[in-house]
Image (cartoon, rainbow, N blue to C red; front, side, top):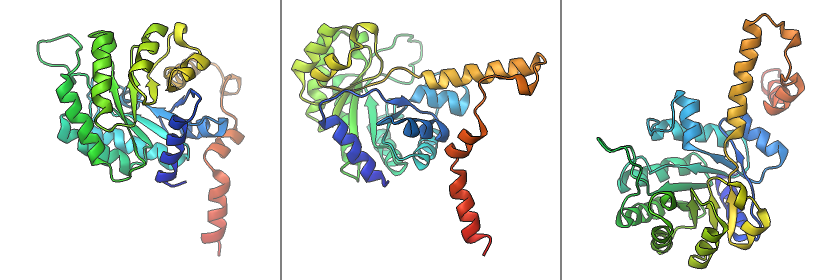
Length: 286
């Protein structure tokens, strides 16, 4: 599937009437797992990207190049649309343009640009949003930078946790006027907030996380939410399984007694071994 076809598929999700829960993906095999299981889309987060590439926390020490390279590896391995958390665009509005260019080339179907003041400023431990005016400049730059009109640009804000609902609604209205294709929100916790957001914008809404009170697909769908992430459990589970396996081996457990190991048949299928075998027969054994 071409990059554009994936973007059209994601646009169809946003234009639909349902709310989907995407798979959190972080590498080629996790993306293939998501596709094989039947997830409609994947999400590649900056926080997970930092853990995968650097083993570092989500403090904006990951570079755009490192993130885009991993995004390309993920997209090369699957055919489902993948949404990228592009953080603050790795700088100002000019950096946002570069971010959109790189992630478009890497095959991302949709990307978020957020209005949080990042990286952390000197001598200031508070997390706060940029001004609305700076956010508008970034959103306009993102929209202008895409060359494939099917690439989905999502304005992201977590301002509801920092400056409250009224400021968030003002940001949503401002960003909608920039021509973005949807609003990605972090920190929404109540049904009343969702109702206020739904009354403010006709754009599709996407959530970065769910709390129990709003974890209701029918309610979310009825209020314009089309995509809601359930956290990054696949990567966290992979870390736990890896450490537990290493610990067991270190403690003397025999390899044959280790539980929860992927069977050879699954690895063969996920790695597309049959396709490689055919290529060997076609091109190396003439």
